[in-house]
Amino acid sequence: MAFWRALYSIRHDPDTYTTHLINGRWDPSKPVLVAPRTYAQSPFPSERGAVYFGGHDANFAPSTERAWIFKADPGTVLSGASAEHIGH
Image 1 (cartoon, helix red, strand yellow):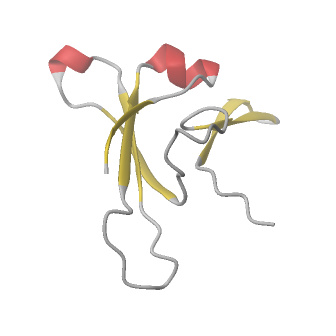
Image 2 (cartoon, helix red, strand yellow):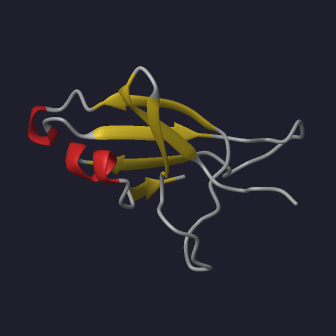
């Protein structure tokens, strides 16, 4: 059984990590995210501290409209709450 989710981990200390889902708990109305490829702090002054997550999974086949971008403020990222869907 496949696990079609996009995960990230937060390191709290050398021996402690927590794992979170980028778009929160599964719901049929949410897009299915796989293969997170990058995350970065927003370069925009109006989005101070925001984190962008991006991914794409072609599953070794030609694909279109499979990439995705989500954004969240630091509190959301650290709490493990759902990030905001920006587009694909």
